[in-house]
Image 1: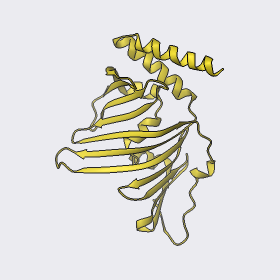
Image 2 (image 1 turned 45 degrees about the vertical axis):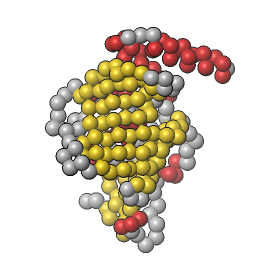
Image 3 (image 1 turned 30 degrees about the horizontal axis):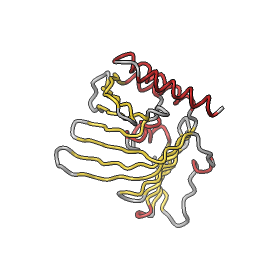
Image 4 (image 1 turned 180 degrees about the vertical axis):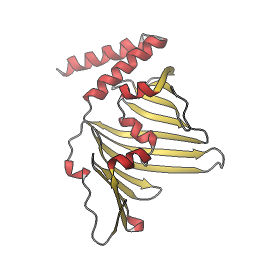
Amino acid sequence: MKKILLAVSLLSVLSVASLRGEDKIASLLSEMEKTDNAIKALSFSFTQEISYTLTGEKQNVAGEIVFSKPDSFNFKQSKPMIQTIVANKKKVWIYTPSYNQVVTDTWRRWANNGVIPNSITTFSSGWSEMKKKYIFSYGGEDAQFYILNLKPKKKEAFSWAITMWVDRKDFCPRKMLLVGENIRISTVCENYKINPALDLKMFNFVPPSGVDIIEMP
């Protein structure tokens, strides 16, 4: 069975590699959607550099995140400050130890505010949804990655141009560069695990005793 799966995977890679231009994009997105449809949960660690064009300021972010489709995650940030954000389809908890504080909010309102960096949530986005928002073009490839360029279909007040590095073996993104009007965000993911065994309790947060709890109105 392992040999059969390996052969199927190899054929998928070869079928994409042998195409060009629009046909290659269509084939690659098809393989990415197949992978996405098979993913029920996802975990990875990440490092991120945020550069502000006008000021030249840079900020480094690092952490680990676990997603469970459709809308639950556990995000542990280690840089620039320690913070935990836990969400399920109803509620969000933001725990900042240095403030001795937990902020709670509804999932819908919090998600609309986009608190988690766009380049992180995009790693778990459904590619069928991405195709509705972006125009994809082929940016080349190397021994490890296919490279995709994404431009928004609609010009909005703020939108991203995206470069994505997609793993040739499993068709999942491993690196991403987002460029906005005055900002660049580069993200690299490691320790990528598809459908890991999860304890669903991780998507419900129990505040430590003694912390201030602030409920958003």
